[in-house]
Image 1 (cartoon, one colour):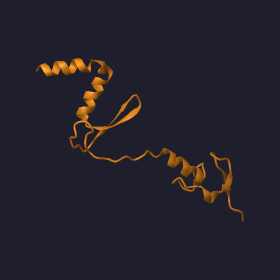
Image 2 (cartoon, helix red, strand yellow):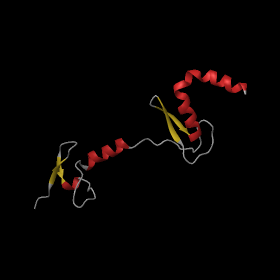
Image 3 (tube, one colour):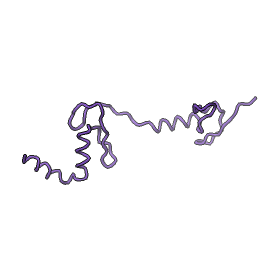
Image 4 (cartoon, helix red, strand yellow):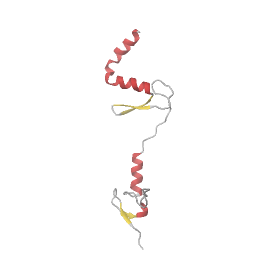
Length: 106
């Protein structure tokens, strides 16, 4: 008796059915072989950066920090308060000197 074969949808190679992970739905296998599946999983993993649980701006310790992106660049992790301030200021950064002058008056 010959074992069943299947063609991978990623690499288009025909391999024995044992080279495919099961989907958890009975006897069904993934459409891509184990090797292609592992490459896809590795590609989808996000890099892990050190997690300090301290806001990068005010250094307050928080249980939940938010990632802040400016022009699609990661700017670190900040607390909700600093996130709100930065989100409000980002489109008005050119006014920052005027805002600081105003705040220093009081």
